[in-house]
Length: 217
Image (cartoon, rainbow, N blue to C red; front, side):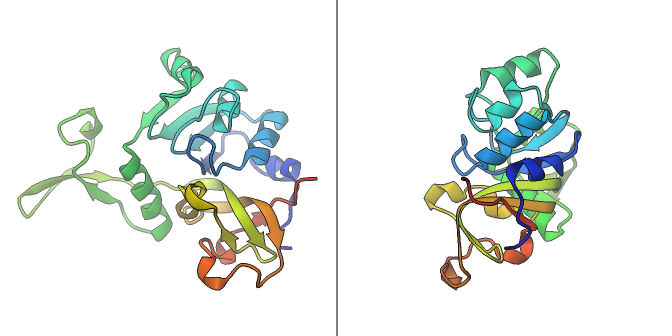
């Protein structure tokens, strides 16, 4: 099985200070066992790139509660008062990015593009310090690509060569994050022989995945 790791071994590979993309939407589609292992390891000073920080005690919220995170790049933090308190106290730096812009910046990082042109944020604080381009009479902000040292993604099924499929909305940010990190670690709910996942159901091909977490006992 491709790059099989226990959650503990996977967490040990992620150093303090790493830049980490974590899939999920309020923990739906998040790699929960891997997050737990990072908390247990006592990870520190992580930069987390994600849609949100979930809620206290849930998903990425576990990392916030445990003091593992120094910086968050996300589309919202409204459901997690601990993230808000950390930002207000200066313990956590927070970059709020409109959700569509966030996913396109990640996609740009994965595709090797130089950035994304978007009108979202024009005339607001979002445009501060950013280049503005005029194209056919319309204005656009240049948003730079996002990449990470690690992408930690949750999946429904994986086969033995790490082809992944997702269940309904649990797909969310996971496939695009798998494109934009130096090392991709996937946590599937089940692992099946090659051929069980129909080719047209594969959403993340195994060539993008470095490691699979072993089955939960």
